[in-house]
Image (cartoon, rainbow, N blue to C red; front, side, top):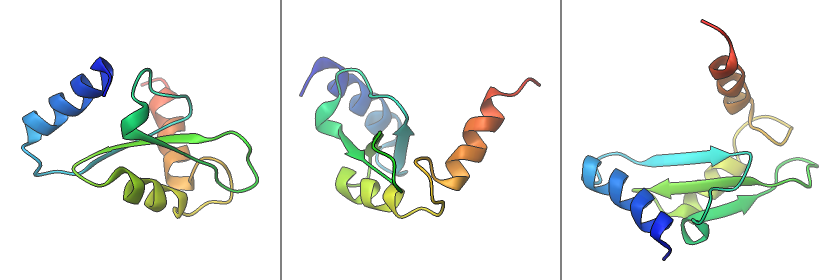
Length: 89
């Protein structure tokens, strides 16, 4: 496990004492966290999404992210969230 893996997992696991499951989906790789991240491809896209998880098995999190609704690379709900978090307030 790299230092980044340890820090990322340690912060969330300790702070939440495993009471909450956290799943992160990113369009670009998390730096240095390959053991806690899975690559998935959705639809006809050749570009992967990167799924990380704490409090839930990372393979299960990747399976769930892959099964989210939407026909494109980014699931529909995550596309809405991505757009909304980039808009001005």
